[in-house]
Image (cartoon, rainbow, N blue to C red; front, side, top):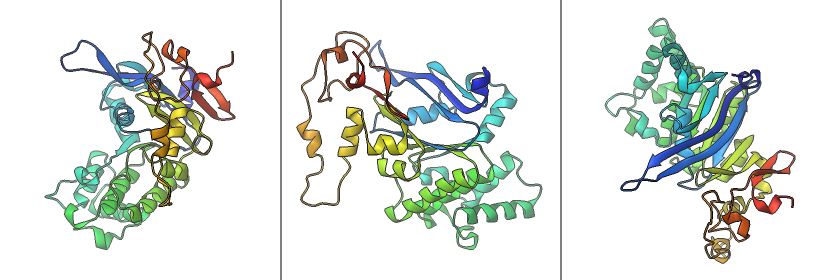
Length: 328
């Protein structure tokens, strides 16, 4: 690893994950040549946004070590995640934690919720005795705005999705990771509790120094808590950079479409009208490399069918992979 890579907390380069298609020789790339990094000197939240099927969860699975990349590398604090020793892999599991979409799936319904916390304490040797373990659980439940006396002893079905998600955040917090991969952590939570969970995620960054990769299809929440953003379409990064810049002034036609499709609180405005009006006829690609957004883009050009666009600076901290911004 280079010194530059060692200074980064996470460095993903040219990540690709291919899957076989039933009955076909060709494979499909769920994640296709994705690169990004997280700084080592400060904690940030990086949002990875896109519609269903864009490759967000596949990317999260690779970052957590559940899926190996077909191509490319993932380095964590200078260590190549694909070639870790047993000791290094245990360290990686300690320093990189996951929070998932459905909090109910994270709990055994036959045990009180604190069972999941005690398992983490035992696995990572976080406490020397029962008293120390109880104190650790109490402290971290309060850190995620849960009252221990109203949480401990309860079974998963006795708590709301928002409460269970906060228990899982408390579990991750007491392990003291440097990075959390949060895969759609608020999508199955009541709207009234989403703000609380998002505020807690921001506090993990600001008060505890924990960086996060926040997988989401909700651009409003990404704008609320994220520092940086990657916008994925069919496995490729179409736009990236400062979250506020990308969401408030989107440059790529796909990002613009995502922003325009967000419902507005106006009963007289038809939701999705922009999508209906800008659907172009398909332009048949002539090469193996082409813009994947070609069949939905209102600005398609012949070159879009001939090669893949490179990421081009479109602002001080904003890149868009689109020929609209390529200088002739």
